[in-house]
Length: 104
Image 1 (cartoon, rainbow, N blue to C red):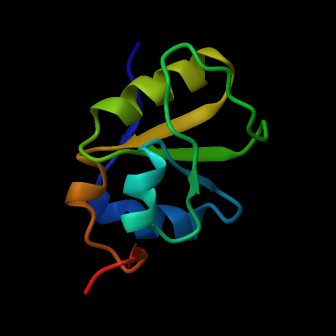
Image 2: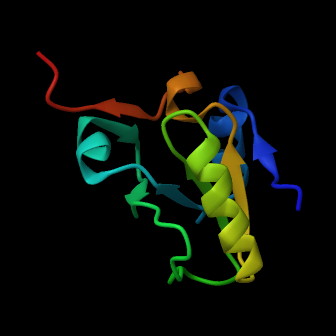
Image 3: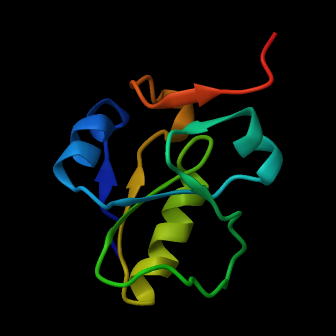
């Protein structure tokens, strides 16, 4: 199954184009608290998990480098969601919506 990917460089434009989009950070809570994309919800990924997100909404999934978000997007698509994964994850994202916390 091919997983739709979005380039980290185009993520901000994608978010602007789809108002009401859900951004899901599938990293651990600790990683999320250090930095995340603004308005992202944190739902740490576990293989086989059942997703409880709004149906009919575009969902953007990201992790640290992209592999975990691809697995999560694959499971979401199997469950009937419209999901895309951010290629390269938050490591590659340099957009205007990046937020850092706990930095000195």
